[in-house]
Length: 221
Image (cartoon, rainbow, N blue to C red):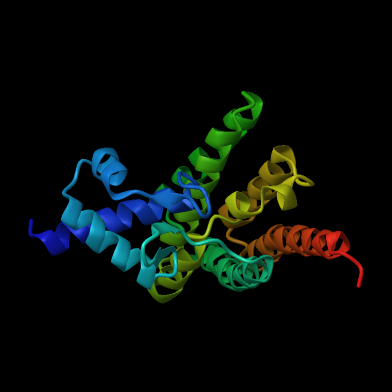
């Protein structure tokens, strides 16, 4: 494996870790620490950070190194809106194209999410939720949509704005995922599209409500 391949593999691993919330927004990405974390060469780390910077996931500032790029709440709402459009379509395709093996895999992810809620494991629930949505993308078998959707899902909105998501609950989120899965298992693409739109619409509503509280905190002129 040459240096370019190593950097590409490392960048992909870090993208996955960003999706799963391993790194915090605006967290400094120290090269020596990344070398240890990923057991790779420093040259691969530097090249991977360049690739992640091109993706808009990392910022590299002169004399200040690299850090995870922070989002404004406006950017977060826009990302959620794009995700709603794409992932609702993804769900409808999944309902139409799921094989029996796909259906078994989707059911397994739903059970894992339910187990996480029952055991009061928020971190595990978030991880299983990521896997659920990854499963939908695979089942959809729509390469162009999946490529764009994976790109915007790299921004973990809950990590960026945890206060915005306090109004939600894991039990409500689980119920959304269960009903979406049920529609896909029933091969009802229209219903799956509607349910995913409602699910992600709630995220947009929470971010919008959070934005309004920020406005209330501004000093009066």
